[in-house]
Amino acid sequence: MIMTIKADKPFIKKVSKYFKKDQALKKEYLDCVSKIIKNPFDPSLKTHKLTGNLKDRYACSLTHDIRITFTLSGDTLYLLNIGSHDEVY
Image 1 (cartoon, helix red, strand yellow):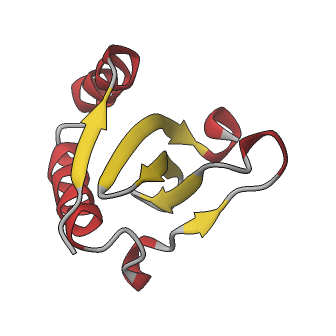
Image 2 (image 1 turned 90 degrees about the vertical axis):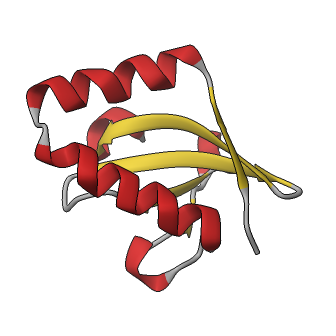
């Protein structure tokens, strides 16, 4: 299954800040998004459903510390937030 990915301006702005701090992160991000497009539940992404106030969202691991949160609607995946564990949860 191939997903369509959408992201709003705040998400894109936050991703850009991470790239300015760490250029190597850009490749990891692109690899991660490529995997998400093909299969949001690829085991290497460690995707899991969130609970509580974020119960309609999923999270996957970009790096050991950085997570991406998203929602799924049909064949569209909406990127919502990126950051450390404490920042996104």
